[in-house]
Image (cartoon, rainbow, N blue to C red; front, side, top):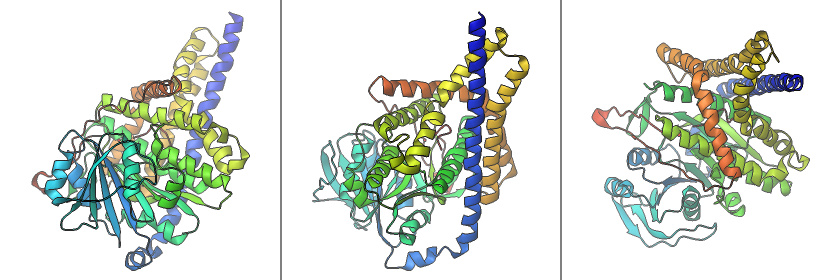
Length: 488
């Protein structure tokens, strides 16, 4: 028993130190993001977006939209994408063997006609292309490809092969882009064309927002608390965390919901990987790997202002499928590129970013669940006292709440996307509620996702229930599906 008590005592101290380090790292990233936002807002009036829109030298973009059973919202999403403010671009929708009315709705709304077009094989894909269609009224802007089902990576690779422009932007089919989103996310390529390899944009939750004509016209907090908690997560992880990593030069995650890449580099590294479920982040890590091996000077960055609005899961079952996928993806990527971890050859990616994801992202849910056992057991066996248990709760949950509140404060000061005071109050309440049950269930899902990767179980996406974009009476409202845990 004395040995067990000593082991529990030191285990509880280690877990306490872990949570202090974890939340401190989040806070540092968020404060760095705040500094970056201040600079961004000062530069915004002189950013030259209008000049970029008028310039004939602005690089054209191919927007690739993989779609599988997206009939609920596909028309509204494509309407938004074909009405973006950008001098020259195309939208390539890849219907990945949908069994619903996705293609039928696109064909009816955009008057699609089939054209004879060969799909090149610059990057590998496994499925069979059934045909290529274009919009009769604007064949240069909208292309729709039908293929047999092969998964998201396969659909993206078909889109990459068909893309005609030097930049490719990957967007989820359940997303709505702000009118200037493409201008903003492509601007770094114009500012530094020789070094910028990839750029990610902000993904925000559209549940509860009013969408008219493919545009988010009124931003509101959704009715469901499950989605409100995810909004806090998005602010902390997508907006704050990734902005902080971008400032550090260690960005390794660009969301597949909204990211832009140099097409030539994507082709050179072989396109999207078929052997990992986190294909978007794996592509970014592979680009780092490739460019570091060549000792090239390059940048992978994140910009805070271009916004992609996406549905988030409103059902626990759907959210569970999503979070297991997220964590399985992290486990697969770190395993696949494990020789980069701690390797000075890969600079900040190998010495800082990937070790961080290993210690504070992949292992975090394991530590959290262990703490739920070790701390009560330590109190019961007198390995720790109640004072220590209280300090642990403050470090793990109180400090985490502080991090979330700082994220909300910085977002409010910088972008003020939620203009109503009651929405801000709901955000604060959601940050509190996140700690009571939500975090613990989330940790269980994440542990299951990592274990499924390590055991080599077949990856299953699960059914993503979507309600889509309701266009009733000209005041559409989204309510349901997409998100992360802390995952900066």
